[in-house]
Image 1 (cartoon, protein in one colour):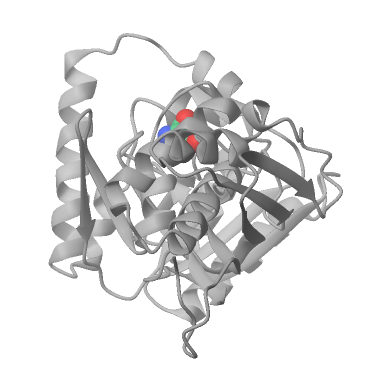
Image 2: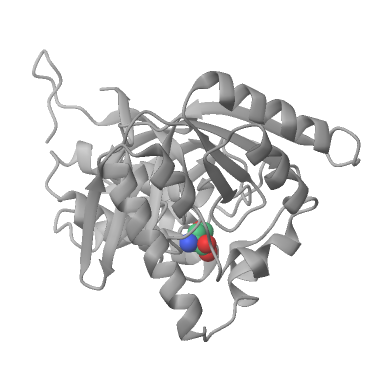
Length: 316
Ligand code: HSE
């Protein structure tokens, strides 16, 4: 049982689970990073009553039946590995809008399992937590991809070298600023996956391999130019960008404003750009606003950085 500083047993904690950017342009389903300052909040209580109870404290009207809810499915997977008769009550306050493309479902799933694990004295490894959280991600998108969940749990930039068996590698990186555009439209991950081609040309695969390898090398060598020229996706972006109004114009204007590169965040509709410093990140934000302010779609923009921390336990 978890103990507080004064050695009392802890049965309740609050966690903050960060938003994440998945794919990072050329790393479809294998690369992602955690964002500073954008997170979901969850209060998690351990009870002696078996099962999972979900209480929504926001207006998103998400299902509360555990096997139909991202948090519930992730915790049910974790509880299968717990021999004691216990359960969890979760009060979920979502701030990351579902369907925004910045890892809303992953934050719910990852936050829940990291918090539950804390109340169980951290008996599970990070990789096991990713496996449990993937059961939640599958409820949301119909697919068990870990490129949002891994950075949400590990923090920083993570590479999924292998999904089965899981092999997650944290990638060191130089300071990078992230400008995000979130058009207020919904793109369902399941729909955005459905439209992708199931087969690709070898010549496109070769370009993509070059770019993903170049991006990892650029991050590890703190080589901004290499990062920039590797942020190219010839496989997914050409198909999905049609789901996002004015994508090409936003990208062109952001690059003209000095962004290193960028593209669709996860399955969209959010778009992100990386910049070397805050001044450029702000110029990119302004360029995006100039495109979006007259097109009649509500939008939010954010400037942030990559968070080196994953899910945070804020009270215990
Ligand atoms: N890699 C996933 C996709 C991320 O692009 O479909 C979205 O959850």
